Length: 133
Ligand code: ZN
Image 1 (tube, rainbow, N blue to C red):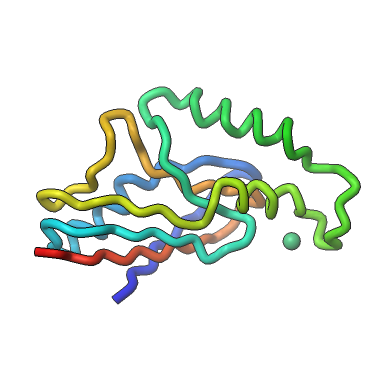
Image 2 (cartoon, rainbow, N blue to C red; image 1 turned 180 degrees about the horizontal axis):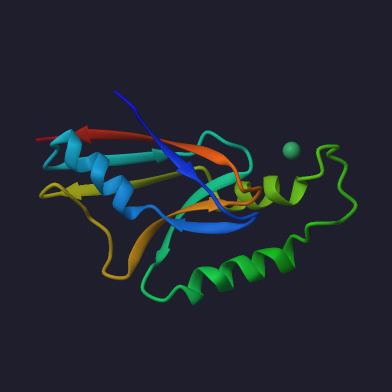
């Protein structure tokens, strides 16, 4: 079974720490050991893992992404959100995290981020927990 997590984003471009939401899904699954697979079924949102201790890290990532991929350029896509599509492809649509003792096996400073590039919107995240115990 695949669990669908609802995420409401609040800004045009935003990194939301969803580590707690994902850990809740792992807890509900009762898996002790295994793999947690995360997939974003959108074309202008993405998922990544990075530092969640200092929020300026993901603010810096957004700042540099906006520099490299400006909102306005000579894009052909008529919807006008090409920058969001490009950023989403660069960051990527899936992550995999190991589960050990019922907990996501993340590094001390790591958190899981849902990356909004064309918000605010109601978004979804697919979570598949594969228990090996
Ligand atoms: Zn588009």
